[in-house]
Every structure is written in structure tokens, then in C-alpha cells.
Length: 58
Image (cartoon, rainbow, N blue to C red; front, side, top):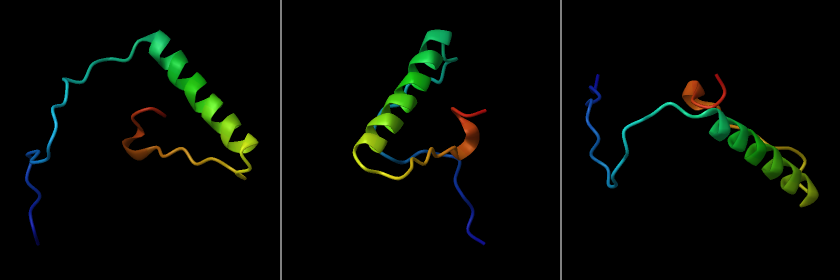
């Protein structure tokens, strides 16, 4: 079995994770809602929100 390495070898600089503020939570929820509404208005039947690792949905 191939072992996964605990290192990042990709490109890009990533900031240190931090706790999201209450205002950022409200803004994120509003952004998701607005995106869903625009998608429906554009003719889509539904919207899928990916909850990988539960970062935003937990």
C-alpha cells in the first residue's frame, strides 16, 4: 500500500487557518443563498453544496 506523505508539495502560499467571525458566517450564508437564487433564476433545477470535511457546514 502506498503511504500518503504529510507534506504539501503544491504551488501557492496558504495563510494560517483562523476562526471565522460571526459577520463572515452571515456573509457566507448570504452568499450561498444568493448563488442558489441566481442559479434557479438561470434555469438550474437545483444546487449542490459540497460539504467535504464539514468546514462550512458543521
